[in-house]
Image 1 (cartoon, rainbow, N blue to C red):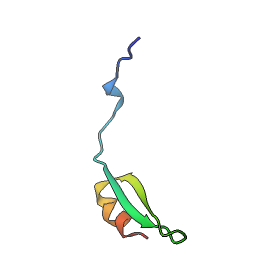
Image 2 (cartoon, one colour):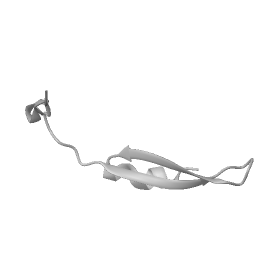
Image 3 (cartoon, rainbow, N blue to C red):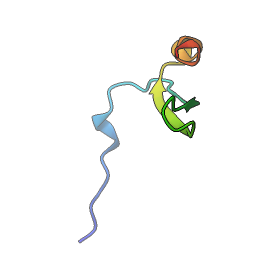
Length: 50
């Protein structure tokens, strides 16, 4: 049977941003992608991290 989605469970909606950055591995030199979902205000701090 099909399930009915219940939209009333959400109390409030937050604006979220998905940030993706490339990180170079010191051992192999290969690049990996690090993804994180956060508030838009925290994106610059996330991208400045090493």
